[in-house]
Image 1 (cartoon, rainbow, N blue to C red):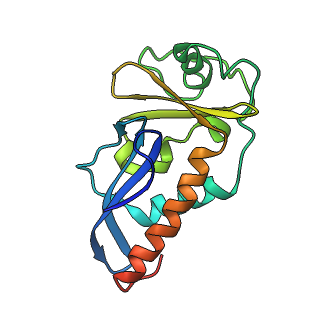
Image 2 (tube, rainbow, N blue to C red):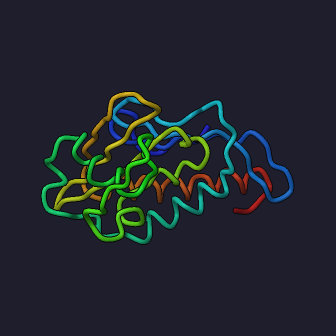
Length: 171
């Protein structure tokens, strides 16, 4: 099993379970302040996770908008999730900020292991805040030092590349 970061802060965990041709399958999850996020029973395309995480770690996006670091988590979801994701009530909500989906949403990083997770990332001058919800559970807000998640993602990519190379393959 590969783990980068720190479980009591932010970590990424994965396990390669099978390699078939160019496909690298395995398990994947985030750990945010000791809480696991992601379906560990799901089989994901780790090559896809690697690609998304590599891009996330290198291409830093402008995730700042005034007030988002201090708003209650439910209000962050109201502003960043409702306008861009289909709502159960079918209602459409106006987008509060430009490019909301591409700037703030990071659920895609976990591929199918995050299919029941909605996760957004906002940033201030010194901290970043990950606001997320799995299934219909309460919305959770985790605060980390600025670029913590991106730095751990970069370390994870390096470690996964070494792990896959040790198994005789290349990412």
